[in-house]
Image (tube, rainbow, N blue to C red; front, top):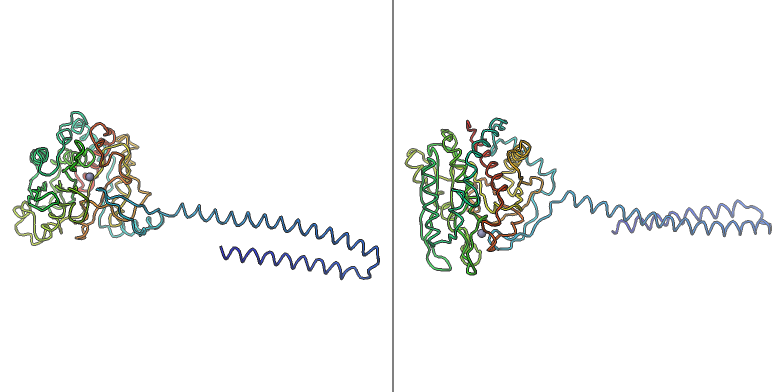
Length: 436
Ligand SMILES: [Zn+2]
């Protein structure tokens, strides 16, 4: 602003000087001042002064337009480049001010992606061919009814109230464990007691793994408990019955093909993600906090049995931790949330675009162009704190039904669920380089 003001006043000064010069030139140039000449000179002067007035007003208008143009242009370009920081509510109701974005423009995001690509660390090493895309699609399609909202054998049993300690909770643990075993996965239960604002509660994380001898794991996770609601039956269809069902579907459809000695799939179904009263550091994420602490100390019992000579902890075997949450309605938009897995997110988004073009999916949910900085608090936090690369796939903004009684089967979107299932199945097949 100051600079503009200064610039404009100096330009006015320049014009004034020029006018003076013109006037003095006329006076000096007139030589002898006869009355006629005087009159002529007066007329000329009044003409000049009128002209001068006009020039000044035209220049003023031009200048004002110029200033407005520069100002508006600057604002418009800011809007384009800037990733607007969001004030977000955590997935469990706690408002968190998002810190300043670490990546402030799409150009930064691009350069960050290429750096990660060069590292070659967390990525799908071989870009999947169309054949893999087609075969995964066909496999998922052959069991398409599993995730049917009304009668899906892997989804409807989960669409019940299942807060910690309830009958539905117990049924859900049994259901998930049974299905995992049925799909050829080794299952371990991490059961523990912990104090909550509603007294001592018993929690159980469920872990499934195929070929536990494998030294590296891609981990898919979701929470299976539902939030305690006093005003009615809260189902938590997107939070997180659908993500759990999608994980089970992946285990069913791809389980037989996962035999690699190098990398394998580990699935974690967390208990006690929801707060019992208000979301705080201690009243939330009971299961993930417990498991991250336990696994930083040693191996999971299944791994220990399969590979007794492995002298490391379970966490160090995780290559990437993918968390699914708030998925299943039509208003799901998933932005990249972590810089450590930006490249992987970008690859996933590429796969989504290809699946969409090939008409294997009808809905797209990822938005790679909108990096959202800051964290949405969720089950990944205890693992991210232990430096595990996290890919958090959660809708931001949250779907409209989030933490309302409307988060039920009625508001789910079949096409979104099917599309996400095909996408995540393709992701796992590509990441593990499966022969589908
Ligand atoms: Zn929730």
